[in-house]
Length: 80
Image (cartoon, rainbow, N blue to C red; front, side, top):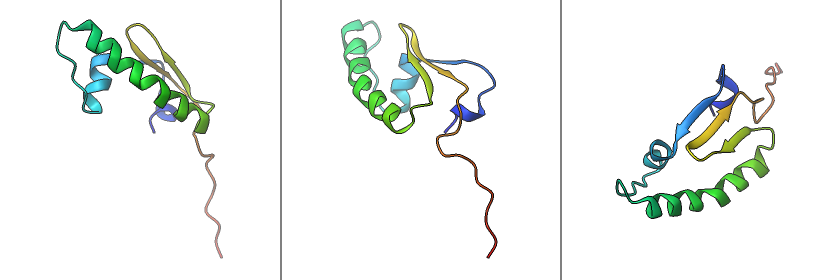
């Protein structure tokens, strides 16, 4: 929901993103962190199927979000 409101790139570190969805790999356990990140890949592919204009990229340090057009174009309400 926030991609179209961004003014510039935003980096979401992996641990921050995972905590937002309730996954908290133990600190220092890089294997658990990599495993959790790997589980996100299929979900991101599904999201991008529904929102192909989303400018999102997985990087080594996190998920990079860039300003993107809205997923659903804005329409003026019709009267009557």
